[in-house]
Image 1 (spheres, rainbow, N blue to C red):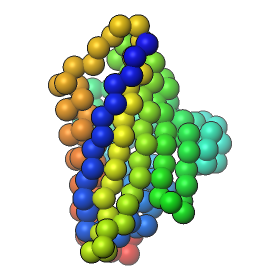
Image 2 (cartoon, one colour; image 1 turned 135 degrees about the horizontal axis):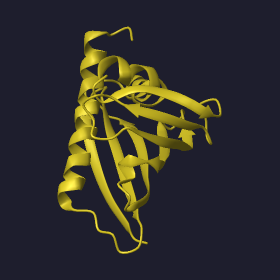
Image 3 (cartoon, rainbow, N blue to C red; image 1 turned 60 degrees about the vertical axis):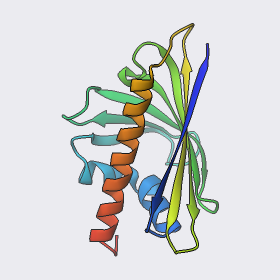
Image 4 (cartoon, helix red, strand yellow; image 1 turned 45 degrees about the horizontal axis):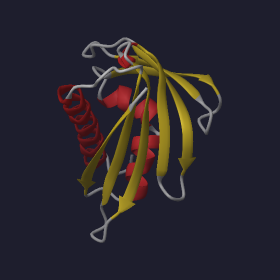
Length: 158
């Protein structure tokens, strides 16, 4: 089993605490509302949203995947960090053991923030992940982040 890691940093003019709330705390209801083609709904199978919570994410019509199980590994609302793992589902493409994401929202001096996201793909055996798949993952993460950012700009009281 190997691990493939990639990092992405996305700047935003949205304040860090507000972005963290939207991207992490409200994501289960917000993303299906603003991007139903990506995520249809999120169902909590175990827990109450904190560490150890297991969620079943149903993808929307625009996705090539049906669903995944997502486990919350760490959540720190004070330091604006969140870690979670995809532990089951067709998005693992049969060749992955899991995908772990570490998200940190960092405030910037101009009142905005930078979303730092590290993705770790744990492969089964000698399975290799192509650069194309990694690029595809980065593009989807960027599109989702930018959709949330646009929503927050359009709805400043959200």
